[in-house]
Amino acid sequence: EIVLTQSPGTLSLSPGERATLSCRASQSVSSTYLAWYQQKPGQAPRLLLYAASSRATGIPGRFSGSGSGTDFTLTISRLEPEDFAVYYCQQYGRSPRYTFGQGTKLEIK
Amino acid sequence: QVQLVQSGAEVKKPGASVKVSCKASGYTFTNYGISWVRQAPGQGLEWMGWINTYNGNIDYAQTLQGRVTLTTDTSTSTAYMELRSLRSDDSAVYYCARDSEELVGWGQGTLVTVSS
Image (cartoon, rainbow over all chains, first blue to last red; front, side, top):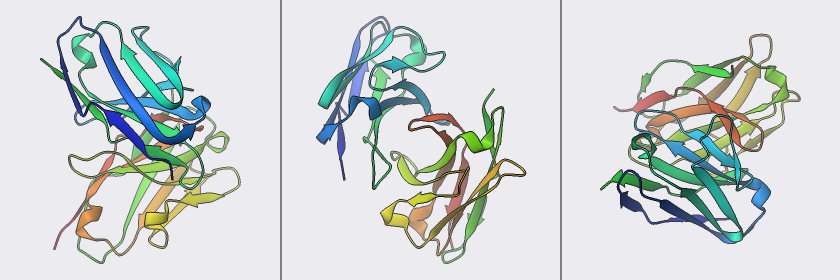
């Protein structure tokens, strides 16, 4: 089973700053099957990016993704107040179909 | 638009079973699978299982195999998740999501509390 490790666990930044979140896989992951989700308190997760770098419908351009193999990055170019949330990376595979990282909490500094 | 509406909160005793429903609208139900994901209080996301709504193929997380059953009723575009032999650590919010190798469109979540 592929294990996804996200870092940092918590990231404290101010609105307007740039956020860089990391997701490292225990073995190589096809970038086609790497996604990122945002979850706000009391809400269901929302798909942000799929195939490592493709934005889902309605996701603003300040969200971008990159990476390949075992190292993937979610970047938020200029933080808006509504971006403070928990972010999860996820990979699609077999047995199990999905695994999630443990999450990075992005909090207001 | 894609909408998944789940059944309401449940309180169950240890050893009991719970069945959560997920009614889909805004798309052709049998064109996409449904995955179930749960989240214990203050914890991360745990994938539970997936059902192919077209042919009924199922894939369960190994950790839950034997205790969870996924079904669908295509006549009502509804998916169901039943979890048996409930334990206190099954207390969580349970989500259904439309599955196309990423999870686009989630239900609002169903809180299941297991307590004696």
